[in-house]
Image (cartoon, rainbow, N blue to C red):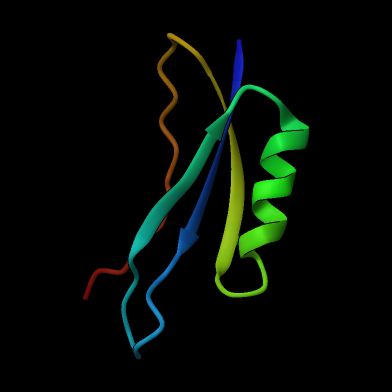
Length: 64
C-alpha cells in the first residue's frame, strides 16, 4: 500500500530548518490538498512510501 507524506520546512527565522510532517495519507488527492494548503507559506513536498517496507527518505534539515 502506498502512503503519501506531506512535509514542510516551517522554520522562517533566518538560517536553519525545522521539518514538520503535515500529514500522512493513503490517497494522493488528499495529500495534494494538504500540500496546496501549506505550499504558499513554507517549502513543502510530498514523498511517496510503501507501507511495511524500508523507505529511507530524506525529509530535509540543516547542519552546520
